[in-house]
Amino acid sequence: MDGGNLKAGENTYVLDGTVRAGILGVKMVRQNTVSVIPLGGRYMPATGDTVIGMVNDIGSSNWMVDIGAPYPAPLHVSEVPWKVAFGDTSKYLNVGDVVMLKILMVDESNKISVTMKDSGLRKLEGGRLVKISHTKVSRVIGKSGSMIQMIKNITDCRIFIGQNGQIWIDGDGLNADVATKAIKMIDEETVRSNLTERVKKFLEKEIPQEEEDEENEEGDE
Image (cartoon, rainbow, N blue to C red):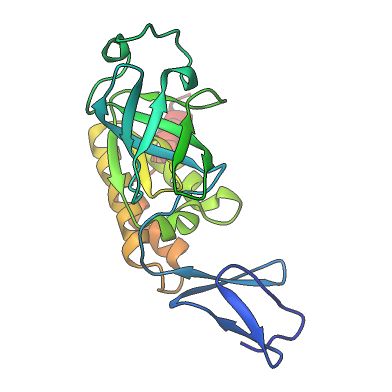
């Protein structure tokens, strides 16, 4: 890539006036900054990330949550919105429960601290979990949230996205199926052109919009 006025962003560097990719991935240019979205690799938690995970073990004063990272993510009773007595953890969260968390800190020894005590963080009831590559999360969200908002609007589903690649979808059975397929389509076809338009066509084909019904209602008035 010719450097020009472009700046090197995440996973890129400048050599001899040219912005070069540091890893194999997809090029993205935003506000004169070139970044590369990696095509693979495990999720590495970073402070401030919002993630979705599943409880896979319970202790007397904490829960172990699988967030898809190489290291365990213990959720301590001091970091939940409930007052939990010692030994009563199973009254609030059980193995298999899905939670939305925030990464508080990752120290030098890769010890992860997480919390549920922040705006929007919660236990996610019902719905389904969809796993994609964490490197494709930005494509699912889209520029200024355009892609995920389009999926929500057409499918009428509630959708929460974790930066670890875990996505929670809740909606009518058929609509939730279509939303899941659309998100998997983005995950699998990131490098293809006109992705937004192709996803829109897929959604409108699977879930026809109610324009005809609205026109009929207007005609009856």
